[in-house]
Image (cartoon, rainbow, N blue to C red):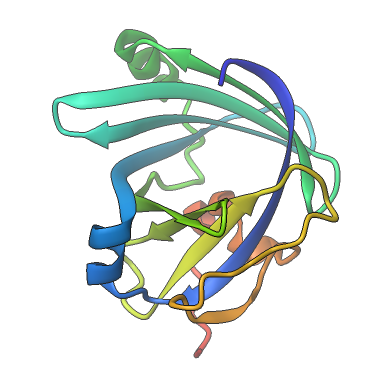
Length: 168
């Protein structure tokens, strides 16, 4: 997507999923996500490299928080050269996140499951909604620990600063 839109998203902390399930029913990609300095309060800027070796796409995204569920999102595809140039604006207080993303469709809804190398027992599952009241049908094969939509410790940006070490 290039342009500006509202992102309405719900996020769940889940038990580490069955990899055979993901390999057989989901589409995967690697993601390298680096947060940039952003002077505006409530603003998050990042660059992302997504794909598999030899076939990457690059995006620059700026999000402004409106509520726990809703953000204004401006995203555009960029060239590899622009990606490399924007990396020089990386926020030194935040680490680059590496993850595998698996897109799993269930009952006409697309769930994104993010696996991080620092967690062996848990992962994230997100879904973008058309509106805040949209009904959800969670995949029964995925074990949800709890919803973390409003828990700021579980934003990707927060993970780039500190990884929660709670027992699940």
